[in-house]
Length: 146
Image (cartoon, rainbow, N blue to C red; front, side, top):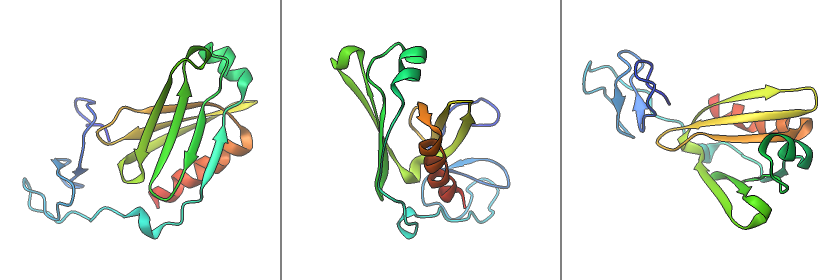
C-alpha cells in the first residue's frame, strides 16, 4: 500500500479514519482511537495452484529477453520467476498473499500485463500473459480483495 501523501510503500495496515500506518495485527488506531478492521486471512480462501508462463514473443519485444517469465501460485504465495539474459541468472519474487496490497490489470489486443503492489516489498510486473492466463490470474487476485 502506498501513502497517499508521500507515495512511499508502507508495511502493516492503515486506519480507515485517519490513514495512519499501523503495525500488523493492530485492533485500535493509536492516533485517533477508532477500531481497525482485522485483516482477512487467505487461509479461508481457496486459491488454486497455477503454473503460468508468459508468451515468448512479447517477452522478446518488450523485455529483450529470450526466456519468458513463469508464475506459480499456491495457498500461501505467488512466485514470479524472471530469467535473466540467456538464463544465466533468475530473479524470483515470492509474495505472500497477505502482503498483496492491490494490483492493476492491463489488457491489450494480444497480451495482458499485471502489476502487483505489495506491503513492504517492491512491486512486481508480469508482462505478456496470454488472454486466458491473464484473466485467470486476475480472478485469483480479485478474490483477495473481496
